[in-house]
Length: 406
Ligand SMILES: Cc1ncc(COP(=O)(O)O)c(C=O)c1O
Image (cartoon, rainbow, N blue to C red; front, side, top):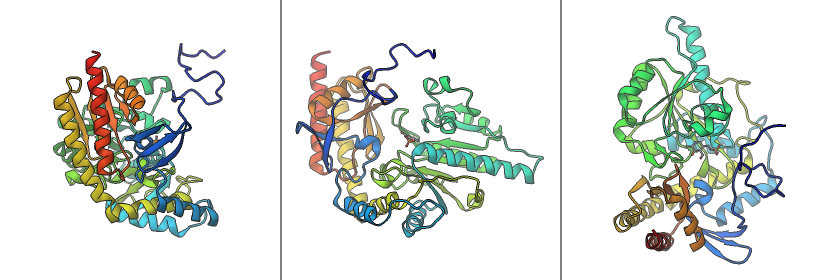
């Protein structure tokens, strides 16, 4: 008999899904832009976008047309055969990120897994060439980090609750964000890489300062450490620049993307600079589905929209959202801080973020929570000025009703 945690299985006993999530019973049946409807015709405004995924919102006409057309032509051929959409997408992504080559996978965790493997292989190659000054196989990451649930990406994720049941993991030293001296000391141990999120998502929408991002770059260069930026959540334009680290003028050696990249289809990408381009050779890594024609076509539509007006909408709506959230911080005694930037923002609502999320849901607004106390808004990039006003109005009325009952 295998023991289970008391109360861990909250899924209805008739479900055949493993109880890794606690889903609401609501069944959404239709979406349009930032709007969702359930079977009974109840309406919600979506400020969560499937957890920072649906950049083009729901039922985007160009996206639907491209996917439908591709489905009638070809769904999958494997990476044993090249296809034009994959090549075109890789070239466009390299141009937008100023990187040199891409490996496509299906999720953020896989994108990070590939980045960690590239760093490990680079260390192995280095040690063969220069055994007198060996690089270690361990990693350095930041407290508050979240990089995924596979064993490699979990190893560099700091949350003890996620890690402990799955030990032993890969060796990783965790240092506090914004402490450059601690980082310098950790890098002196010659790790295979430093991995960080320029804006920590699951960790509570914590933006790393420009100074810290620049210091991390400098320290990595000085110590010969590979720098990995996990932009799975903050990338693909979500924070106002294509990569969040561009705001600090910092270029990593490896960058990972997923979430919004294929606008709702599963896709991850690991991008490398010139120095790391030749590290992986045929047979070193792979993915049966990664970068297939369907997801690549979807991502091409997303990037084309991004370059033709969507980026401007993100900037305008980000400004509007920032002003509105700042006003909520000033007006509500329950909110102590605005976090994040662009269309990756949140409110610190000590002890009551989950209640706020639940009440918002009842009021017809989808938002999320992270790090326990933070209400998270990661809306579709296509949201309009009216959608943004509706989100802010609904949040305000929820916060007012919560304060009356505290
Ligand atoms: C920064 C970051 N990295 C990695 C992941 C893992 O992505 P996925 O769930 O697609 O594996 C996430 C997911 O939330 C994330 O926010």
